[in-house]
Length: 81
Image 1: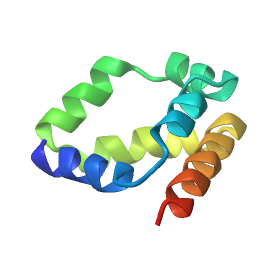
Image 2: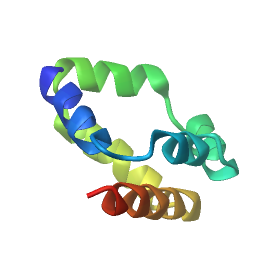
Image 3: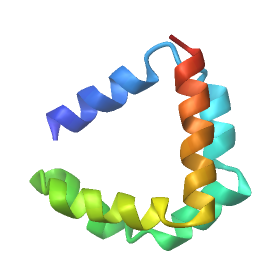
């Protein structure tokens, strides 16, 4: 779990958190949240089950909403470096 926490901190370091929050609260963000099984994500993260996390991420990124969300996050994080 510590590796995921470090990864999250590294990604967010210098990123515009207001913009990231806006993306998370966007229509696409809300649709993705509804698609996710939060308990499954939590279990996989806590146990370090990277295969399960990759599967979840692949499912998200296979949707138009997921692709747009990922691009928006990439743009925000990329511009903060």
